[in-house]
Image (cartoon, rainbow, N blue to C red):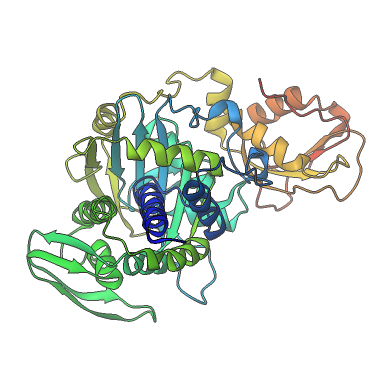
Length: 453
């Protein structure tokens, strides 16, 4: 390879890296080291993207919404809303984990603008199927109870219900990966607005140490940037959310400056594969990268659900939480995401009654058709049912679908019987028996999955 070709290769690789770093940190679209490498290679070689088994097939991603509910990302016509999740996952530690950071990002290709909304982790909300709790509990509950798509899917559903707008995708990164990615791009520059002193910053061994920042412009490595983004003992969660957005924009500025060494690519690939997950496909990642490149420099709006629209409450169990003035929150959401299609504000009475009952449903696949359990679960969830657990593979054959009833949930039962065509003789009442669910659905050979339009 001659000098000119090497220079061209380096420039192309850097451009590709910049695009994907912007998506990864602004809209979160890195899926794995393998996909990232494949895409960079395709961009550098100026070839069309290869078809990768599983990624063009949206059913291969557990918990992903049906295609008709997702925006047409590839044609870049509609706003895309992505939930960024930062989890406190430590090496050698098994989950489930609560989400320490939750930021909803929206990219609107029609205006070349983007918005970021930070949500306080102590925000008191209704988690679909699990009652009232802090919003950061949704991720751990989804993982613990095997919710379809796991913690990220339940976090998406919770944010969607709370804010009243669609949440199309998620990106999840652990803090170790975040720290290493900052190091891999050579650190970031932050203008610290005031003195910060935290005498009890958590370490990785369940202890604490002192963290301090002086005001002024300074370069931070990954460890320092993570401390800056996470510390909150000096102030409150609202101040912390502003610093998290500041760090994300600093990474974007570093990417735009092209000041990223080409030698850092292998390390970024490894970190991406180990630390980041998403329900975006490869083609959607590429389309998002193109969108991000077209964002205007002053076209990124940032906001937070802060103390002007929440108040502190102590629950009966002694927990301090933030209760929102939802009228103010929804006003902010409408201003920040003006082109996002709002959810139906007047649901039909049956769905309202089902939601009010909040029946916890388990689904078992007895149809004899593997993976039908997940298809049925997604279809039922789309119709408002709280299916908290399911099996995707069939372990036995049953001619007719049936329901086992542990708790009286009349509206939910009547609706399920009608929707699944269950005969009266296939309803078993188990009142008085103990179970952690209210209803169990057992799919039979008579179940016909819905066909997406």
